[in-house]
Image (cartoon, rainbow, N blue to C red; front, side):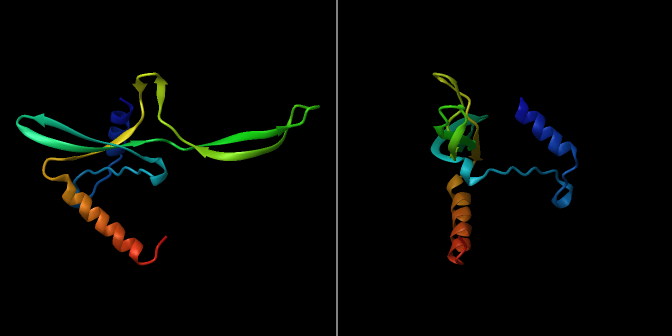
Length: 127
C-alpha cells in the first residue's frame, strides 16, 4: 500500500517527460543491493513474463561501545559500523524490500545493454 501511495504522489506532482507522458524515477543505491536474486515467472492472459528480483537491505549506522568506564558506566571508546540485513519480523515472515525488473521478451537483452554501458563507464578509469 505504501508503494502505491508513493507512486501516486510522485505522478500527481506532474512529473511530465517526453511527449507529455508521465514518468517516475526510482533510485536504488548499490549499498542496498544484495546478492539475493530470484528469477520469477508469471503468465497473464497467455503472455509469459520473466522477472529478475533483487532483494534490498538498508544499511544502518550502529555505534558499538568497546570499553565502558567502570566507575561512571559511560563509554570510553566506541566504534561506528555499517550493518545491514533482511527485514524479518519473525521466522518465516520476510518483509524485505526488493526491486523486480519484468520482461515480456528476453530480459537479458536490456540487461546486456546496461552492463555494456557500465563497462564503458568504468573502462574510462572511473572508480
